[in-house]
Length: 200
Image 1 (tube, rainbow, N blue to C red):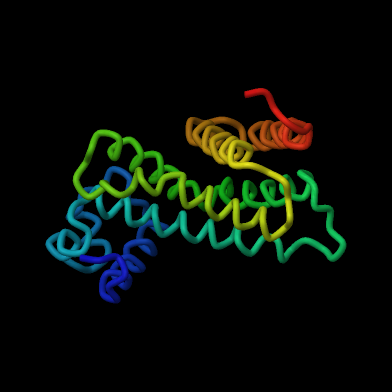
Image 2 (cartoon, rainbow, N blue to C red):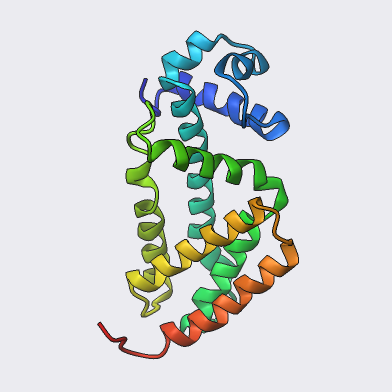
């Protein structure tokens, strides 16, 4: 069933609300269906498999975070800096959003889906294709909007570092220490991104 089908979108909304309240990690498709008030057959009809359902949940949450990234430049004051520091300020704002403990169940789901997708689980075929490319495209659009001279390598480094530190949080790392690590990364990133041509 296409993801843009209205009934599929409605079902996904219901599942995400349930996931936010109860969590879905470790739950069978039947358990999720019961919690949502539908049948597991309907979930299979819409999403193909449990893995396909989880991939759809993660894709929706990821899109919401990219939408946030698209809106972040509006928070910058008039006369803003247009150097790497401006990009770092946006990256920090996005980090504070995605590392919020309230989003932790969905971050856990993200890594769960990555794990099953790399093994070719049914219903996750398009997940890996959209793992990083949409983030890079949105980041590049934001960079162009701000007139920042940053390239794809610098943006990919930011995405990869954020994901690595999110994994640390899931593994039990201290929130304050992880935040401090991200701020340290941003200071290094600003210096690196603004230092001119880099060696091949």
